[in-house]
Every structure is written in structure tokens, then in C-alpha cells.
Image 1 (cartoon, one colour):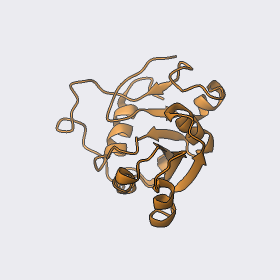
Image 2 (spheres, helix red, strand yellow; image 1 turned 60 degrees about the vertical axis):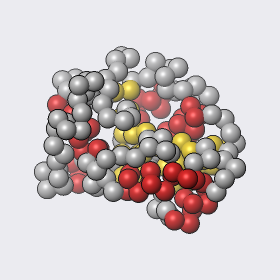
Image 3 (cartoon, helix red, strand yellow; image 1 turned 45 degrees about the horizontal axis):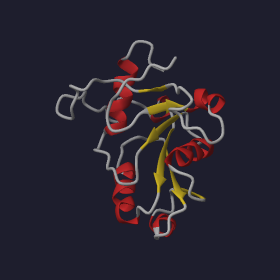
Image 4 (cartoon, helix red, strand yellow; image 1 turned 60 degrees about the horizontal axis):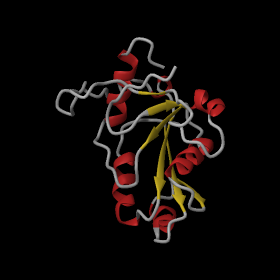
Length: 171
């Protein structure tokens, strides 16, 4: 099923379906991915469903989400991006930065200032290859993408998860 629903800044993908579907060097889009999330163009931060707090969702009931951040010469913005992801109130979170052959100090920034973040380095191969490499290294049940120059609003993952669980047939 190649249906796509838009919500928030990036799409969530079920890693278990993607592992078998992706071939080396091809992006999720090129593979007819099972990307999904719910929403519409009229859904904004002001009228989005309220994020649930952790008392509403026990930690063991929520899946682990792996956040994949492809990075190429993004030292200037990467710290703010990582802080916005680390500020999410999601209890089971893995963060993976895939450095796509940067010539700046992006990798060093991750190593020194964000030791809890997994750093994967590769020769410059493009953003699709970096995302696929991130998926290959992810341990989570779900994948969320954020670009190295984007910032997530607080509660983004809970709002997206809530919208997904309300979608009939969402998986």
C-alpha cells in the first residue's frame, strides 16, 4: 500500500515493513514506501490534537521511535535540531545522526555535545542514502525523520502518534 498522509514536518515509517522493501541505494520514495502519518493541509499547530502526557501513555505501551537526521555541513543548525528532538516527551527515543561526508565540524559537535546520540558517518552519497543508512542502523519500532536544519515543536511526536492511532487502518 503506497498511501501517504501528511502531518507535521516529517513522516513516520514502520521500520519492520521498510527493512524488506528497501534495496541498497534507493530512497524510500523510489521504493513506493509505506510512509504514513495522518492529517490534512488545514491541520495546524493551533488546531492539532493536544499531545498526551506520559501519565496518559505508560512508557511500556508506547513503541520506541528512532529519529533519523541526515546531515551534510549542518554544524550551524544541528545543535538546535538535536535539542528540539531531545526535548520531546517521548519515553523511548533513539536519535541517529547520519553525517553524509561533511567537511565542517558536524560530526565533532555530535560526539562532544550530544554523547547520547548515535553518530553514523558515510562518504558523501546524498540525502536519500543517508536516510536509508539511518534506517539500517535504527533499532526502533518506528522511524521519524527530521532534517538537520529543522526544529520540532514540543509534543510533536505525541501529537503525531495520537493522530496516527485515530486513523482507521493506520499502522
